[in-house]
Amino acid sequence: MSLPQPWVDRLFEKLTLTYGRAFLDRWRDLDIEAVKADWAHELANMRAHPEMIAYALQHLPPGEPPTVLQFRDIARQMPPPKFEALPAPTADREKVRLLLERAKRSLTKRVA
Image 1 (cartoon, rainbow, N blue to C red):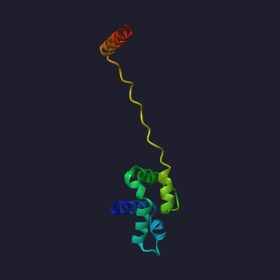
Image 2 (image 1 turned 90 degrees about the vertical axis):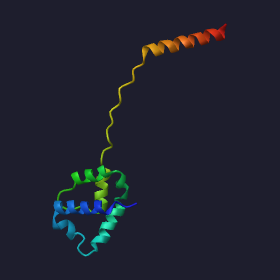
Image 3 (image 1 turned 45 degrees about the vertical axis):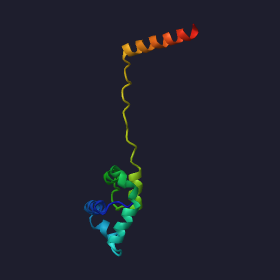
Image 4 (image 1 turned 135 degrees about the vertical axis):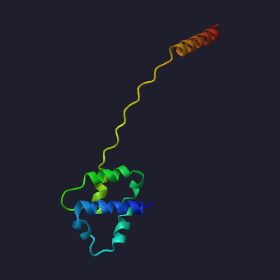
């Protein structure tokens, strides 16, 4: 499933604002809707991970505007999210004591 058209339109707006005419001139002799459709196709896997698009927009190369493949490669360089470990659960001392007593009684009955 391709990237939604409004996302691609917004992406093109942002890249045009960033690079000016240099971005649009890159596609000057092509049908812009076909170019956008290609971007939607190439970036389709980012539909579930829009943070990758945001990352790529924050790490655009200076000077020359990226092609869709270059943009995709930048997005793929996004580091994986960092997760903090949850604190270890604390045991309910009374429950532990009762379970140990029950286990001891069970083992005592089996031996006898």
